[in-house]
Image (cartoon, rainbow, N blue to C red; front, side, top):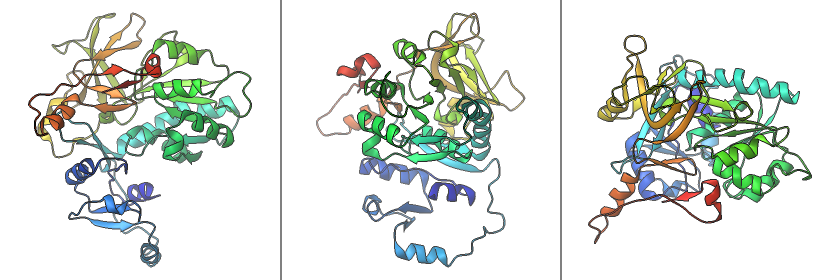
Length: 389
């Protein structure tokens, strides 16, 4: 409710995960410099002192103050297309989280694309106008916007609590008991849900009709496994935070091996070599994204913004393109396949992690002169791509 209220009133929000360490909370607040921090009685103690006003949403005093205010927005409060909608902080190689500023126009464009490409086809496939969608991601993860967009299109949103979403067996039970039709998660989490019986043949109870994957590359084994589930429509959604959640999408039943798919409406993608020339088919190049989906840039970091949001030599004058750092291969038939990273950035359960940030934190500790960070598969989930630093 607070998130939607801020947006409707013409403000921009920066989400704070209450599970973050205190130093991370302080770093995000210092970077975002909010006017107001919205909290509850249970979380207010984790908000450090600063030049912001802290408002307790569950305080009787807050409700009384809100009830006394006029119901209409003041003149000029409605947001414009180029106004900031939100700031999501990602891992930074320098040891400081960096805030990505996304504008209303980019979010509105994504909502319109998904309505035509995902939501309306789901209605047609199920024969129902209103579906039940589960929100299983933290709101500090920009992928949480996809289920919220379903809600804004008229569907019912089920907000799953933290304990349930982190326990595959508990989440499968919730899907059945709450009759969830649409579920979005990371590929590694989806594999765990399948192992817990999400779509098991002959299993009693309700099964989802739509599954959307994002945040990580889909392993070939999981791609094949999901294609064989009858009655399940599966989408692979790709997109960095700097390009507003999703910029490429692919339906799993239209290809026999993992692919990133085609651009969402209003977005262009280029596969370029080191000299910014289009890479030849079947050769690996770096993926660049362009169009209205691009974020404004990094909050208060003009040098980093200029380094990653570079001039677009293929678009209109003044256009920009975002250097993703992802290596892809465009096949002869035009499909895009993920081939790794051009730098050291990694994904852990869908979250971007800069190893340099961890190195900086380690080397700041007494007695540590040099540090190195590596990614390795662990435990029984390694076959599904579960990894840890």
